[in-house]
Image (cartoon, rainbow, N blue to C red; front, side, top):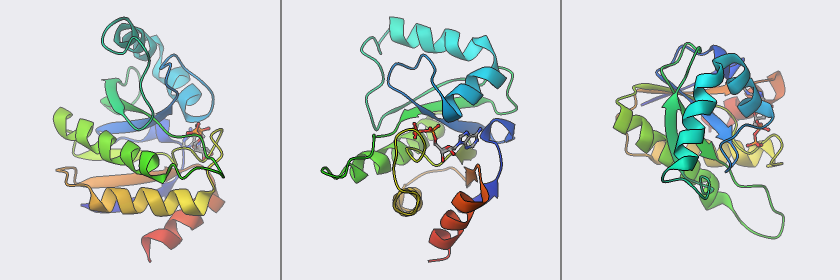
Amino acid sequence: MNVTLVQGDITEQRTDAIVNAANSSLLGGGGVDGAIHRRGGPEILAECRQLRAGHLGGGLPTGQAVATTAGLLPAHWVIHTVGPVYSRSQDRSELLAACHRESLRVADALGARTVAFPAISTGIYGWPLDDAARIAVTAVRAAGTSVEEVRFVLFDAAAYEVFRGQLSS
Ligand code: ADP
């Protein structure tokens, strides 16, 4: 698998799937989640509501992943995953790794070969970028997957540099 990096907006990626840093309600939020629903149109939220009405009645648990249409976005699917909120007193790294692993498992089930990830948990959820980058890169490298390209999409130059440092280590 190739791990690649771009600085940019995840909603513009022409990958088979893009990953959403969602919250467990699946009903929208800020950051990446807000951008995906804004640009992708109402079809994505409609599918999320159906999931909530069905087997995800209690919401999507942290560390798990589920797919919907990508609506008007150039990707085919959005894979929603819920990152852990950063905690100083509790090590939640395994849950952050699980987001990456589970998203790739869902991608495999869809037949997606190219998948774009944002820097999950590093926005509203407060995870320090360098630590999140280490966990993310380690998790995707260790995942047994048929995905051929994992593309990390970093919104700003600082995040891009941190991920670049991790990839070359
Ligand atoms: P979380 O709640 O998991 O922390 P956020 O969406 O708040 O998720 O932020 C995750 C990361 O995504 C942050 O580093 C943020 O700067 C970045 N980000 C925000 N909008 C976009 C976007 N449109 N494309 C790519 N990355 C984005």
